[in-house]
Image (cartoon, rainbow, N blue to C red; front, side, top):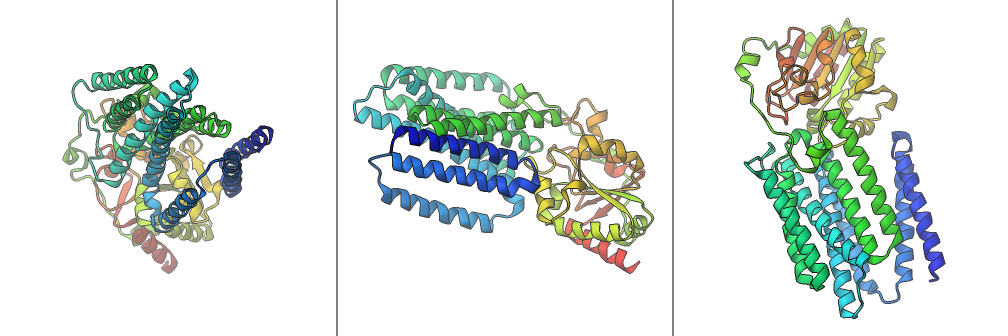
Amino acid sequence: MPQALVNIAYLISALLFIFAFKGLSHPRTAIRGNLLGALGMLIAIVVTLMDKSIISYELIILGFVIGGVIGVVFALKVRMTAMPQMVALFNGFGGGASALVAALAFIEAMALNKIMGVQETVATVASGIIGAVTFWGSLVAFAKLEGLIEERPIRYKGEQIVKILFALASIILGVYFGIKKDISYYWFLTATASVLGVLLTIPIGGADMPVVISLLNSYSGLAACATGFVLNNNVLIISGSLVGASGIILTNIMCKAMNRSFTNVLFGGFGEIVAEADEDKVYGGKVKSASPVEVAMLLENARRVVIVPGYGMAVSQAQFAIRDLMKILESKGIEVEFAIHPVAGRMPGHMNVLLAEANIPYEKLKEMDEINPTFEQTDVSIVIGANDVVNPLARTDSNSPIAGMPILDVDKSKTVVVIKRSLAPGFAGIPNPLFAADNTLMLFGDAKKMVQELINALKES
């Protein structure tokens, strides 16, 4: 195929990727954005295959079938609550694939006695380091989210020095690889970078995992971009750059939402629990529980209700019951809105996706900066499974692991109803004084079941 046609096709693919990102920025255009991105990737794949003269289509078809079957099974079987884990795995697979492709490109060049230039050599080293860090860092993130390893930060003395040593070792091995042109050094550098990926992720607690996922997403894009330079493939460079840049932008937004330093995220030095508060001192004799009937009576007299979804809503799959609760409240003339914290759940946009699944109008979803000034005029705030994002300690305790993190000011509502299974702490591992506040009622139980009982009580009233 003429190179001019290949470049034109790649340009069309790149434009479709850009329009896909634009479409994904709003729920109403998200489906169209997905389709545009898929079309762009299809064009890129077809053109790439047609551009190569020697290709084993049998292996490509086999890989397509195997990967397609795995993708369909995961799409059908994986719970919505497990989507953050899946995103972490996808990030990891992208990074790992980039590192392996770069290695195979080098092996092929050596077999054909081709001389790799400075660009290809540096790009190969970058792909190996970033890809390995992404792959193993993503596996650790997956394991933390899945509860396979300790969710809390794993810290030790001198950890930053250890990370720096492994980073330097990876770079030095990369230099030797460039000088010696020996694939052994590439595997050594990926090994040290793999350890670095683990070390960068284990010090991060579950409360901060949304930031980590967005950063790993950026890493996977950068690894793909580096591999594009290895292969001299324009569309891979462009698409990798888009993913890398968008991931960095999202990470920066998430850092601001959690009052975290971007430098801390890069070096895995945040999420540490400084000191755990005494739960008995916070909760002792102060927690007031209520029944669904009592909460329904409270809602009957409300004019404005704000619902605050959290990870507990995702676990119980309560979004459809919440939609029904919204409808019955609105039928009684009560104003209902949803307060969305940027890092509620376990990945960026987690709550938005779940509520969109239940066909809750996007206009009712209010971001933190918009909803916070209205809590003082709110009769009842219903917190469903959220914890750290509504914890007043972020404002009052400078030693708290969430100190300075912007939160939803639900405690300023006239009444707060918290639906939660127990008083167990959130991912930050600290108690929440909101649960013991004078204006708070606790509705203990599974979120979906409690919301359904609320609906039944409202219908009977």
